[in-house]
Image (cartoon, rainbow, N blue to C red; front, top):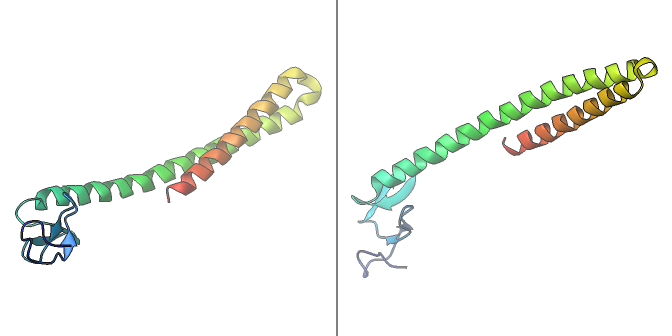
Length: 119
């Protein structure tokens, strides 16, 4: 591959913004990636900042899923336990508590596994 701006020179890398081959004269290193010198340096810097911000947000999302998993798990255990405890006296209402508890335990598991994807 040759440089887009100097066809006689071999390319040493590709601009992250425009994907064109660049020689050592045309290449500028911005945040550990290559960009067109005096053309795309600002755009590549903004792309790198966006990627870093997205990684940070991903970790925050994971903690939210884990917090929800703990809450749903605790409330699910309380509802299911109350339903089992009161099954003899409440009948169908106790079955509804048990079903709600099982659903909340399922939601806790789903949140836990979704949160693990974002670590």
